[in-house]
Length: 612
Image (cartoon, rainbow, N blue to C red; front, top):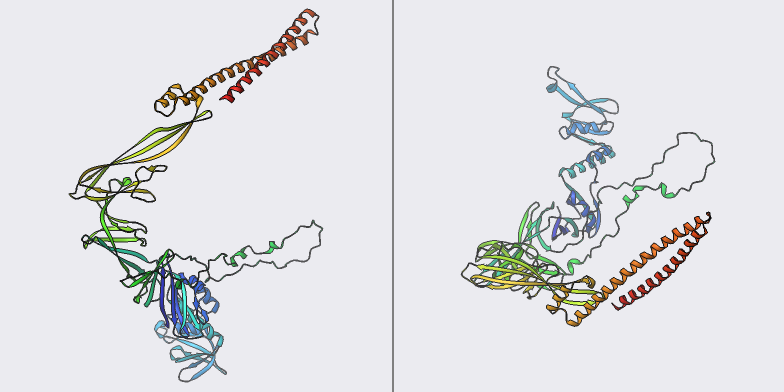
């Protein structure tokens, strides 16, 4: 194959960017069938002439179209069957030219048919029919150009499908040494670390090693390898499968012309005749376009890598450029060292209050680790100490369970009123709530230990003691823990308010606030004055309710009096009727007096409310 891969760039998102050079004008690029859509989407060739490849059709369907299907076990005989009716030139001891009529099986010995029979090709020559044994044919030349082309297509089909799961792209260019680029999904590269800590120097050496897989169908020989932490946008789009746009089916006329019948006109939209599947032919909109110059815009700032490569930063992404050429054969993987860095640090113990029984030994560094996420194996003085997980932005690596520090935790909440305010008819109480976490730490070793105590954050609470560090979920406190038992208490506070209607307060509660110096006597007098006004208000409202009830009863009494007066109009009892009329007048006078009294009470109630 005349394609030389020069550069391979692998992304953590599982995308590979490949660059190569075509030494000849024609060459074959083998592509995994699962990757063919990505290659067709991204393939870029300098001086491209043509790219041909097998259509994404079933092999049997293609064979049916070309009309050739040769049995691989009896290939010559099978081919001769496909040549029936065609002109050929056959060489035995002499040259014969004619049309193939068929193949017969002639028995020589009827006792043993299988061993004694021979296959005979029947050839029609210009003036005769000739029988030619197949085993005597030395050469057969097809004279029909059409079948010759079909046979070439058949052989190409067999050649391209022989290697299961691989599609060969036949590429032609206008010049030699043309450059070629393409993008395909690949196995995402992984990053692991080796951390060697030395007690004497209090220094950790980080060695970053990448795991790279060649999941393509091409060997990578002496390539320039780049490993990028960025995640460029990439998606799948079917370009390989033939797209057949569904057309509307129009039925042919099979009956005579019928008479015209008058009907109500109905408007028919032209859209009714469009295919609902037309959308299948439309490409997806909004496709992101990648800047073709991304790889050339890496930032100037770089870190010296003493192993085999260097690091370049592009925004938040980092590119690891491996200096030495790399060779990875197809279906193989490799460990590739990327960088080495020294960082000052010390041993410590990390304790989290939500995992209080799991104190962990850790390496605490003098600076934040700006490394990609990955698993790390930790060695202390060249002895395996444990595994850890590196996360960008962390300051320590926890690698094993500590056996010397034991912790007992106690928690309690204390709530009290810190301030009281009077707002109109309400008393606003401001509460201060302390969440206390006490730790009893027992250091059973004979040496002092550096401890990072991480206390989980509680929604709404703030620490009263400033932490050494604050993370998303924890407050971190650094302690120097001597041998023996040490007790530490940390308080977290929050404030909140509660509003109470003053009329619902009791005198004992008010006196209690005064004793706690939350209310002075002036404010107490205000509250008691409100109490007195509220009692007056309640009394007046009760009186008014009683009057309103009496008015209601008197209205009912008037209705009865009017009914009686109406009935007495039909009976000759003038004295009795006169008595009822007099009582009705008295009722009217009573209602007038009650209305005045109710109005007076309503006025007094309004004044009390305004005063409150």
